[in-house]
Image (cartoon, rainbow, N blue to C red; front, side, top):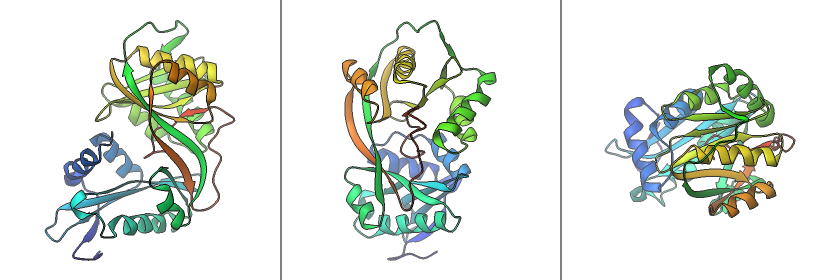
Length: 279
């Protein structure tokens, strides 16, 4: 499909993975190739190509069966910016989701909020990305490493809290080399997976903030190196604990919707999200 100034739009192909990972690296983001493959498999990922056929921009629409979908991975190469490509991709992904009866949702950076407001999006919950360095430590005895037999209830609990089934996403995260899932009493879990710059924690679901603190501490104690995680600002006790551990706030996000915002609080059980690209 022709766009403007010689750009064309195509669906992401396996042969484009290296090119979109170059966009991720240029932006300093944390996704890895496995994320692109998962997102493209669940949703619809597109790229823009310049007149020479090189990938210069990307975007993703990730539909969930509950009637909403995520827009993410809107990336434009520095050399191709200020040409309206991001605006085009946002409108294209909104139209793709609306055509399937899905309310468009996204987690906007603080700088991106005015842009999305102009497009008609309205704000909901606030989140923050935290970063720090984890060091190995002792894990509480009532916590366990999640095994294959735990995946069914973890997927069901995630669906209950998030409001849509994400079992394919959960299975993918837990199946990746180096990933770890920790469980607490079949009522809470956290997943740690490899990222480009740091280990990414999330989702983390727990019945209470004290349980969330126990799960987070256990996940951090199982790691050695840089860590990122995205925490709902409303979880004040968990945030205070994170600060006390010496973690620093990297940036904020505002969850925004173009239509009625679903309930992502899960009766207070949603603690860390899977990431702004997933929700």
